Image (cartoon, rainbow, N blue to C red):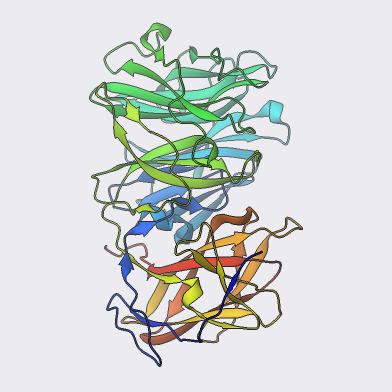
Length: 473
């Protein structure tokens, strides 16, 4: 049973960035924080993020029947970024990737006609400066002459040469997924035979059927091509990342140029299950390398996945040292160059309708806001900002309702119309990330989390100004 913590009703009020407490009663001063819990999106698989020369991050993931591109000035605020939905006219849209090649944008994605057997790779082009603007032109299917099942295509650029790497079937039956490479004459055309560079053969790659090598991603360091791929069953806790390498000066269409490591380089640990399909990027200031990956939401969650991110370092042989997935309840530093946020611990809010502060074994301050069980249950916070505008709200939330369904808080600002704040079902003390864009006026504001559908709890929320396209950081 959770112990209820009785508190005197206070009205915490913070001057965001100026950090000047206001209001009545004794108010604990809040501080900016450079820490976050490493979830980026509470729903999603096959994350791809690209940091462009304009300083913005462009992100996409599997959304099923379209390609959606998010744009954000920072890595940890992707979910509140501007977004563009691009129709494809197909089904089973998997693992899209956004590349900037020869002065134009290209999206590569897997698509079928409703039957997985017919999954093939396709590409579209946009010549606008900003991929969330302008027109996306379908360039059609990208394939070698076998025209067999293909997913998870990515582009490798080595000097002036382009190569396409993907996961495909050897024949027309789903026995195993093999990694293939082929040369490209331009960003939408393969002009060579496909060459096998990796097939599932090791014990940790063949422990589920079908056997899987997929999700190839490339990062090059000092002439070493690191192809990091996903292996084992994506629907299991055994999903993990492996590595094959090649020297940039070698013949990349020769299978002998590629060497596979015997052990996975990133696998389940610290309460994170099935870490897999990923992409690489850097911090806003370029000083840190980051991996963005998906993982199961809980033990045995299968294809019910979320997106996480963390830093990595390098081994002496120029291969990535990914380490282990960060403990989800261990805060880490924001990417270098990201502005700090102001954090509001939920237990320090003003409660009503039976909602209250509770002990929490995994909460950031050892407590959380819960008992949102009555129609009028709420917790609210007084927030003072020095500039009017839209702000990113990033809330650490949990939903362990017995019915297993999605829950919502009703989020309102200054007693305006409430909007639903989605809280994914993962279990109590297994925190997700609920995000919203909130308009704040210069001066005092009142932010309220009220009971919506289902059951939910709140650990804290962070606020920071929301930057838009065309602004500078």
